[in-house]
Image (cartoon, rainbow, N blue to C red; front, side, top):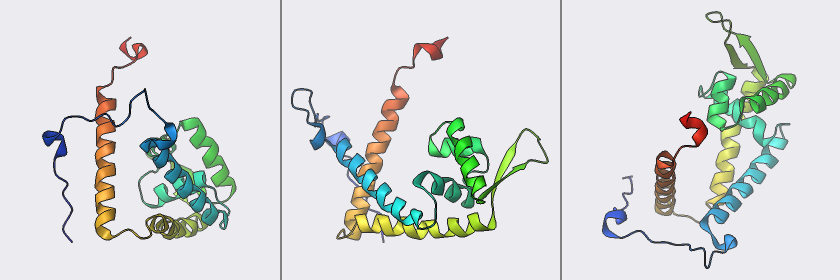
Length: 176
């Protein structure tokens, strides 16, 4: 199936202010709706993960490690956008459950690699199916084309946000 290409509306239209301070209602904002969707998905995923004794926070590192997206605590922190202290506590819990091992690197003793135990691998293999069930459930009634358009529009929003953040003035503490 060919990828859906959205027209470059930016070139054809001036910027539109969809929201103004005079009439802003948080419950009617797109951000509020997106947040509600994330909360709904998180709850549904939590229910599925609870059957296996892990939480929303705990399945993410298992999946990242199993997919080869992270092999150290620092990489997990970057992937999950959380601080290294929180990752350390999370890894402590996963290690106590027998799902993750910390293995000191033989090349650089300062580096501690993360590996899944056989039980961690078993659980990690179950995660994609649960995620697909939840996402597909939230997309019930959508056509393939609607899915593709929605994804393209959300990616455009993300790119706009990344551009805004890249162009934002840096704090004074970074100027020093």
